Amino acid sequence: TNGASNAGQIENVVIIGSGPAGYTAAIYAARANLRPVVLEGLRAGAAGGQLMTTSDVENYPGFVDGITGPDLMAQFRAQALRWGALVLTDDALSVQREKGRATEPLYSVNTRANGVIKSNAIIIATGATAKRLGLPSEELFWSRGISACATCDGPLFKGRPIAVIGGGDSAAEEASYMTKYATHVYLLVR
Image (tube, rainbow, N blue to C red):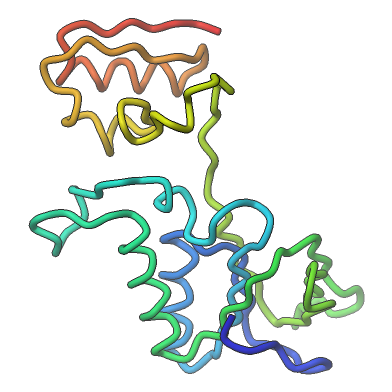
């Protein structure tokens, strides 16, 4: 946490989420002297988004030898702080637009630990969450053979048979993408 929002103060912008999109928004807003408030999350899992569960990020420019997801997100966070973003380890529980302010909207963000934060603008950058199967060894093998991103991890499975588990469009797209790398692709519909 980098301090708390001042009670009664109207913030310029509140950013909900602390993955790559949230911190990128924070960096740009802070560089524009907007002093953004970032709600990095408290209960939804580790701040930093899905990259916090990624062992090696090898497709991000500037890191020839790769970088771990947590290290990359620590750099995003540090850069946002460097430019003046206020980062709160807190959850947004709800957002309401104040009534009667059509031309200049004002929003109230109800948080778990910091009460209500009022802001002129809201950026929602809550990202996505991979659907897990709930298998007994799933956590043990996450990022060690189990992945939720074909684009991110496809090359790691080159020359191996793989299985994609799912039944919707996303599973079909991931399975199709993996045909570039895997010797066989099995689509298991749940």
